[in-house]
Length: 320
Length: 252
Ligand SMILES: Cc1cc2nc3c(=O)[nH]c(=O)nc-3n(C[C@H](O)[C@H](O)[C@H](O)COP(=O)(O)OP(=O)(O)OC[C@H]3O[C@@H](n4cnc5c(N)ncnc54)[C@H](O)[C@@H]3O)c2cc1C
Image (cartoon, rainbow over all chains, first blue to last red; front, side, top):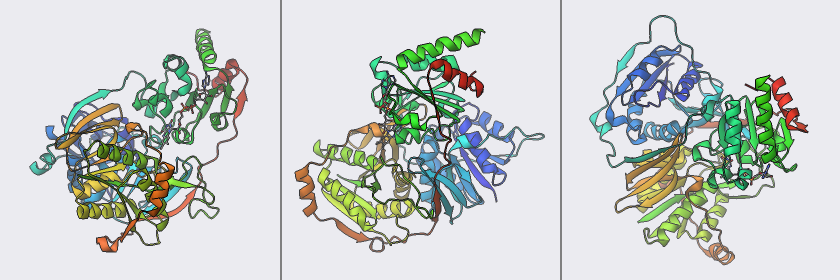
């Protein structure tokens, strides 16, 4: 049994957390092959070679694989599938677009958003906005999975020699697939804070922030706590936060040790994204808001008073 | 150009789902149902293109049980020109995504559709597989999680919501697009249109007639509820909140 892990490459950069943790999920099964396909991916490949749980690294370094369009990557991955028991990719915008396309090319079923691997064929997938845990068995081979990476740990560095590295030259027809698909522009969301998907602490804001016209109170508290910033769909739709910050069924699924939800109601679709958070704190002036019922610690208060006070007290704690 | 919009009927998403006592499935008793919200957005996008003169017809297709005919009637009431149900065997109650994608690919070929606009996921199963699987089966370009869509002379320009920001792509047609929440606000079907839709036919065809053999590649073994959280605590002040957070070791 050898799983194949497909990771996202950013030219010249080290592996991302999602890729490393997907490897962690695969190592539950057996030592894995890691497919590193993209442009300028030597650094990324070398780092995977130095991790535990890696049997082999396959590197396909080609300018035509950047950006990693599923149209081109899927046939490449399908070609690498032979000899592998499983294909795993992260359940993020990279893996979600890619792996079903690979499944179609291989003619096999797959499981999405896996949170637990019970055995080689059986997994748990949260469905119905996280209110149901579905046990799925896949009968076809290879077994294809996208995994929710927050529940899996990145493997440690390995002692001794790195894993062997194989070079794969992508077939010209793979690189030439769908030449009409072109990247016109990429507009990055503001960065600089901890990554929302893996942050220890997250402060999330909702439409309650509309009164003030911006997310400044949320960002100030987040910075005081060294936290990432999250948002509801309501806040994103209102233009208060970029789409990259949306948490929930159709945004990011997060599992921070501390989640503080401010000025948001706690809709089913938002709660779907925070079910695995350690401690959930709610700050909302409506005592009936559903978020209070979902919270471990609930404070009924106006956010425009509570947040500045919280920052003041935190600074005092820091100083003492 | 005719546009194909795959649609699925789902249980009311505002209602928290619970497992049946025997864990064999989800308890749907007394829960209303309707079109998957992302499919309504897909349908709205297709209708807007038709209304702008950029498409000639909109075909809504469900691959599933007879009860999904209700969702197709809603699609007709919203303005779809035609509705087609691909009938599936009684077990499993909901066909797996690969079977659905294969059936849709067969319909696309029969109808000569040049654009498929699908929801990016269903709100019940949440697989998010159908769109990219269909694109793979047809070997068409794909754009998932689309929040802006414009048709160009021979292709499309889209904005995708992806991790880290917004990605703008150009792709040729034919293509498969899946919809994000912010693409549009779907219209409501008016009462007269709902009444009219009742008299419109929902066409039917079987998987078999399309040459699709359902594969038993995936089996649902059972469902459970997620672990319950212990009951929470109401705190009276910011100071008390911080005290609890400090005790739990959650402050930096
Ligand atoms: C298919 C689908 C998918 C969805 N996916 C997601 C998703 O992934 N993520 C998501 O978040 N939503 C999602 N939604 C939307 C979701 O249903 C809710 O509409 C949304 O989460 C509401 O956002 P909100 O809590 O910010 O706004 P509201 O529900 O309007 O809540 C605002 C809250 O702020 C409180 N408030 C206002 N002013 C103050 C103040 N001064 N101080 C304290 N409290 C205040 C109010 O009491 C209220 O409870 C989805 C919906 C659909 C249909």
